[in-house]
Length: 128
Image (tube, rainbow, N blue to C red; front, top):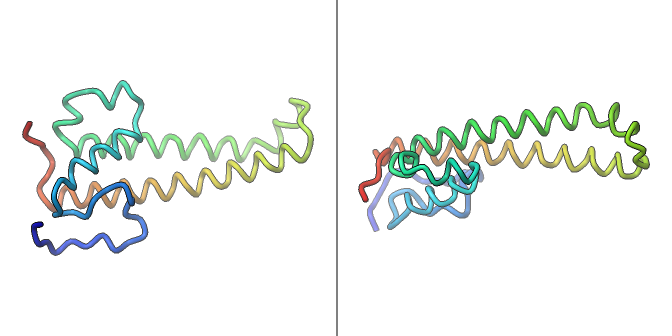
């Protein structure tokens, strides 16, 4: 295992990604990042060969999902009653959207941490 000065002690570091500098850590990061983007993007060789590009796209994707979840949360109380849903379902849905926004914000911080580690370790490109 290579020694490194980077330590992902932050709670933002995803548990699915190995510690930077450890054996195969970048492969675990790429695998995790691929799960965050639509399948068609995750299969593009260019994004896989350049993990920082994959991290960038994952960041954009998660930011988009945050906007969608916020919109759903902000419009739920006004729009869901017109669908004939009971108040209890509406309240549960609002809680679901609020929790999803928080989860997505955590994922966005995790993507930034992984991306920063890739840049700091000079692993912007894999060599097949």
